[in-house]
Length: 380
Image 1 (cartoon, one colour):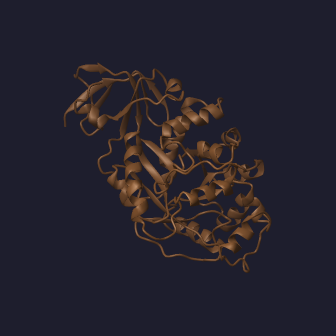
Image 2 (cartoon, rainbow, N blue to C red):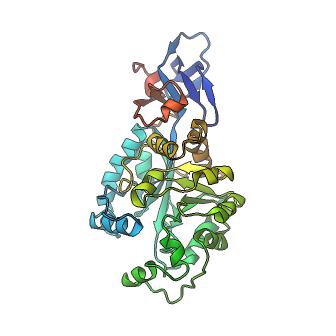
Image 3 (tube, helix red, strand yellow):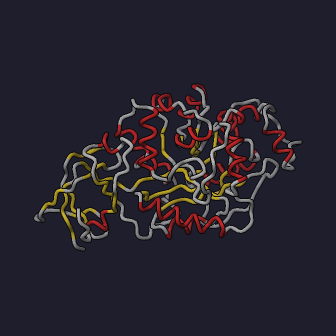
């Protein structure tokens, strides 16, 4: 294949940075030996394709409610018609295709999508990305659900999902060589209250016709409850906004993964997780954008910039690992790798403009292009 030799300012390989390397790139965006080729200087940074470990492609924008908190946000989402209720999936899949294309154009190559229809695996592939379709099921009084092909079944949260289904999802993970599963956890203080039989959720669920007669309130924190059900095997714990030190210790001891979505957390509840505490314990951290109902966009670099603003002690290298090697590792725990294979995605991304990794994460929206396109002759 034709090859082009370029010298960006930096190359981030997913785990460490290389200053001003000479990279040989094929027309397909793969590495090739650059020996003997004229070297072109490129103003920017080369990265592997980014990993968005948690998003909801089917969910569109919703207005911010007057009151902060998960329940006011959920009511606003339902009023805006953004919550799937089981009918007319194409209404949600059409916009999902557009969002997936925008994600790929912004540099996302791998995605973990939370789907209410169970149909976004094809959407991911059509957009040129690789990824997993996590089919999220709810029903605190529904112990099991059918499993659709090309999906990974997952629970929604401790207050909305039957404990048997939580356990079944984890068991499926173990039986398939630790294919990852995920769950929203500790996003709001009401979750811990629910597990004590307190707070608004028991009444809300009963008002929706859910039968709580057989649910035994464990009087445990959400993380401790999930550990009893699953030992956190293969778990990606999304949010962990309210997770305290003892539960962070438990997560670290189980080698579970936490997915950060800080812009969503700030939008919904105005609070942040203990990111530094997670880092100090060596917890594997990945990054997601959540949905457009709680984030301004699905841009992974913008999410990293928001984390850095919130926790300025984190290095650019640590942040970039969240969106590259750590994210890929978390979504490829299964022996055969990702369930959906990439269509036309080049694996290497050029972000034009920034002079170093710190500038890359300063909040500027930099232009970017896939190196397969660049190698084919796009101007630099």
